[in-house]
Length: 244
Image 1 (spheres, rainbow, N blue to C red):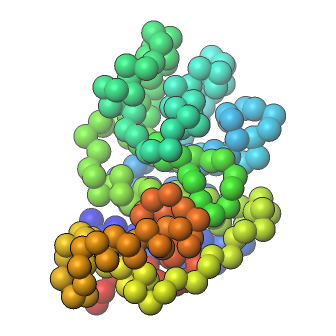
Image 2 (cartoon, helix red, strand yellow):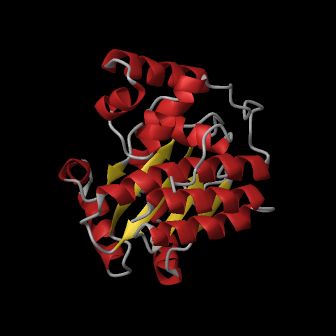
């Protein structure tokens, strides 16, 4: 799977998008490309809540009707967990399911009939401080790690561009400039290199590699390396295209 190619193409489509709907179409296509037939972007507490700012989805219409008719937004365990945690998670993880009530478990079993019973949720924490999450649905629970990795980056790119187009930004959308070495470390990280490999490539010690990542995260105002990578991509400080 050419995840960097998918991410690069998705970023280019978002950059040229004129409306939130254009970002939605690009999101759904990128999700399919990394193995998820259905995806949603939610900004707010639930798809039906009055304070929801944006809800984008290509989930099956039959499931959406069942979801609405059953009042599932009030018990949805995936949305509620996405709002409580900083880390992405697979829905079928035993730890995740252990926290579900019998009613929530029945809802998740019902979703399987509509091919959205499994998937990967990505709480979005970016330079634009608006609470959001992306949900990538599948009919299978054996989700490849590369699909999860790509989905995390896709989610932050989608959130940044939706906020820009919908004017939800709090004015902090301009990313501070990284140093040359910080950009290089993030670029190599985006191409799949580990810390030791990055150190060898740059002829620097392992603690120095980690210090560059820590400084990049601090400079960009994010909590993790994947978010720093996407923020650097979104701000044009590193190239999304894979090496030729």
